[in-house]
Image (cartoon, rainbow, N blue to C red; front, side, top):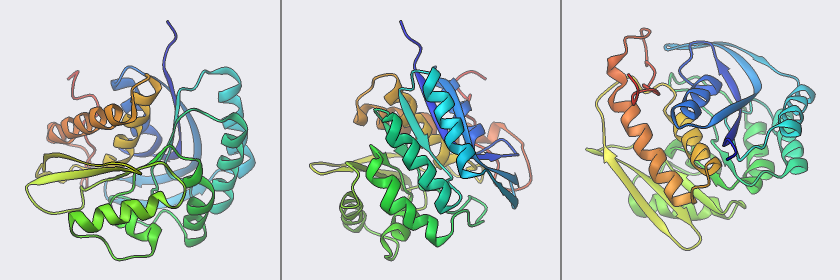
Length: 266
């Protein structure tokens, strides 16, 4: 029996709660072997991002080629692409290797509020990476930013934005509702033929650092194990809900602390 492998292409979080570190913890928690390609190093903690050091695009490509030349990658998760030339390098490299599943998390702003993506890189997401993705996982502000629209505030408006995101070339969209209001946090899985609302109780905690990274990598882990998309999304939702619910077991940092990726184990 082969070992399921997932690859994360994202930035590093020096405080360990988001980015590459969160993705690898998620893969491990879900019994998937994780490989990684770094796009950027961040000087970051739970209170904010104080510096970003970009990896040259040709070296991003070299990392991707090295992984695919040796490992049987079942799914790819893309997080922080940092700049347009890096997005182009990722697109070109994945175009050569053609993985079966690509989950794109359009990371634009950190939980602390720090902006992580300039405008030209957002356009590269729209034109290069979204058409290659199997699933994109924007939160409500990111979905609005990708479309150049106000943030949706009703179920109907969210579903409509999801359909407009499909028009950018991806077959499925998961709009994350963590930035919404109310007693429940609802995510919306939208395809050309379906719109499914996935709800979970909203947890009152400030320890949400890395939530988006971890959800998208959990979906990629499920796809790497051979799960169908809806099953992978539902399992990922259950995983991240548990990680948020257990987050207050940690006392880490002075800002938005991390979720508890390994909540099933300790």
